[in-house]
Structure formats: structure tokens, C-alpha cells
Amino acid sequence: MKDLLPGPAGFEAGGAVSNVAKRLVKAIVLFGSPGSGKGTQAKLLTDCLGIPHVSTGEMLREAVRNGRGVTPKTAAKMHAGSLVKDEVVEALVEDRLSQPDAANGFVLDGYPRTLAQAQHLTGWLSQREAHEVVIHLAVDYNVIIARLTGRRECPRCGTPYNVVLRPPKVDELCDLDGEKLVRRDDDREEVIRERLDAYDRQTRPVLEYLREAGGRVIEVDASNDPPETVFQKIGRAMEN
Ligand code: ADP
Image 1 (spheres, rainbow, N blue to C red):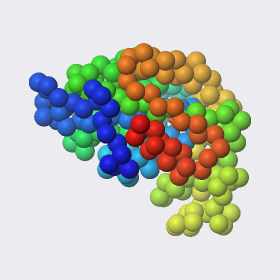
Image 2: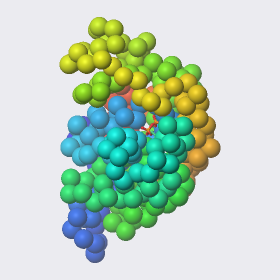
Image 3: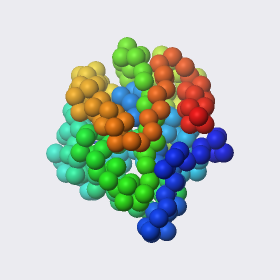
């Protein structure tokens, strides 16, 4: 799909900014509720485009695991399914996007999730004369619940599974390395409800903001199709 991803009008960086900024040609934002498949599509996109996957959820979980860079309060918020403070996430993202491997672009997954974060991102990009391309994965509420409650992953290689929709060959074991699959700490029913509430209250309005901010927003119906088909839909939409 690499060849099919032209920079939309105004997307390519240029003008009197640093060389790094000039090379920033692909800023992709994957947008959608928890369980909409952002992580899966982000992996497919990054493999195809050779740009990094920047997942704020993953970065935060990693920081909690290492006990570095986040306070117990942040860890508690994640555990409860509510959003962590904007400043914490903004600092993590800014640091990550400044790494050399992100100079040609990146796929953001789970950011921005509040209006303040969206303003922060659009400001950061416009300083570099770049614009985001937003891909909105629209998924039916009931499908989301089924996906999140059945979700498991391999703790060693990160391969995602679903006990109902995409079960491993042997019960609860990873097909690739035989490791026992785990459930994410926040994929418990009461926490799922809180995460979906946070999405409705704080994150959904961000899509309207991004639309009005002038970036391109691509709508993709991602309720019923397998990931490969959703990925093809994204590719076709980006071609147009
Ligand atoms: P999902 O999209 O499946 O809910 P993520 O892995 O993206 O999960 O995020 C897990 C948790 O990390 C969120 O519930 C929240 O506590 C925290 N988090 C991730 N990204 C952000 C963000 N941009 N702003 C605030 N909190 C975030």
C-alpha cells in the first residue's frame, strides 16, 4: 500500500522549518472506541509503511511495568479505566515523536483522546507544516463489548486473540510460542464500562474538533469485517 499513500493536499511538510520537520510526511491518527481494532490496524499500517506505531496505552502500560515515569495515581487511573492527565500523555507522545525513527511519520493509536490533547497535537504538527490524516474506525456498540470481554493476548509476543471471535488452536495458549494467554488488566466488565463512558464523554467530541481543524478524516465501517478487509478499506479510502 506504500505507493497508494500520497500526501493529501497540504499534508507534505515544506517551508522554512527544520529538515526533520520537512521529512515528516505521514502523520496518521487511528481513532475509535476501545475495542474498535486500532491496535491491529496500527500494526498492519506500520508494517506496510515502515513508520512506527505510537500507542499511548502501550507506552503507559510499559511505564507502569517498569515503575518509571508515571506516578501510582496514573497507574490507578488506568486500572479504573479512566483517562490519565493530559500533561502526562502529552509529554510521553512529544518525546516519542521526537525520536529519529518517527521523522518520516508515525501511526498514533489512542491519542489524542481529549480536546486539549487534540489541540496539542495539531499545534505540534502545524509548527512542522504537517497535517494529520485521521482514520475513524466505526464499530457497533455490541460488537465492541463482545470483542473486549473475549480479548486475550500473548504476554511474550503480543499476538492478539479473542476466545470467541479468534480463538487460539489450543485453549488459552499462543499459537506461535505456546505461552499462556493473558487478559489485559482493564478488560474486566466494570472497567470496560468506564472506558466506554470515558470515550463517549471525552474522546468522541475530539473527532468533530479534528474535522473542523481541517485535517482529513476517513470513515471506515469496521464492525463486521475481518482485520485484513478493514485494512483494505483503509487503503482504498486513502487512495481517493
Ligand atoms: P483502549 O483504547 O483499548 O481503551 P489503550 O491501550 O489505548 O486502551 O489505553 C489504556 C488506558 O491507558 C486508558 O484506559 C487510559 O487510562 C490510558 N490512556 C491511553 N491513552 C491515553 C490518552 N491519550 N489520554 C489519557 N489516558 C490514556
